[in-house]
Image (cartoon, rainbow, N blue to C red; front, side):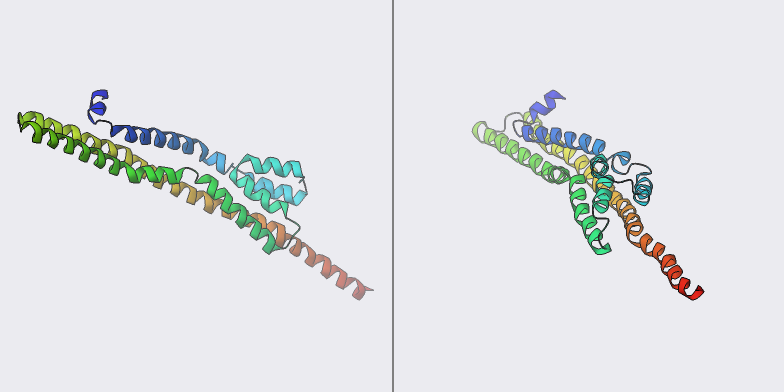
Amino acid sequence: MLDILMAGGWAMLPILVCSLVALAIVLERCWTLRRKAVLPPGLGEEVRQWARAGQLDPNHLQALSNGSPLGELLAAALAVRGQSRDIIKERIEDTGRHVVHEMERYLNTLGTIALIGPLLGLFGTVIGLIRMFMQVMAGGIGDPAKMAGGIGEALICTASGLTVAIPAYVLHRYFRSRVAGYCVQMEKQATALLDDLTLSPAVAARPRRAAATATPTAG
């Protein structure tokens, strides 16, 4: 394998660098985008119970925000829980954009590697072919077997570029899809908390208003 890589010439160097960067990104994203790390099981319901019981303080909210992307989104809503529904919703949307940006970190780089991998391979192949034909012009065709071997060595760059680009593209699409699915689940949890913060007080206020109206009548 090492002999094959060395046969590709100096143009293999950027391809190898891209492969190492892509591998690092894939490993980091696989760890960061684990489901239990993004959407801890039962966190949404637990936070709603905290809100109903009033068990919220700045330290509690800070710990919630630092715990997971979902916790950061819910903590942003709880930080302005005394405001109107529109203000809370706006805060959730602003925080959501930041959370999504963090979950998509390095994915643009992975997509770029998927795009330039074949181009780097083609560039190396073209350079190899040019060098081979320059040798033919200088010394004649010589041994056709050597010429065929030179063409094969030149094509190593193209094969290497595709070997890097294809998995990078597939994993880029996979991570994008995973982030999109997480966003849908986080939106559902944030909406449920928003309803608890804004609709529950209004519902609870109706019996009190009804009782206040009925008291003078009873007198």
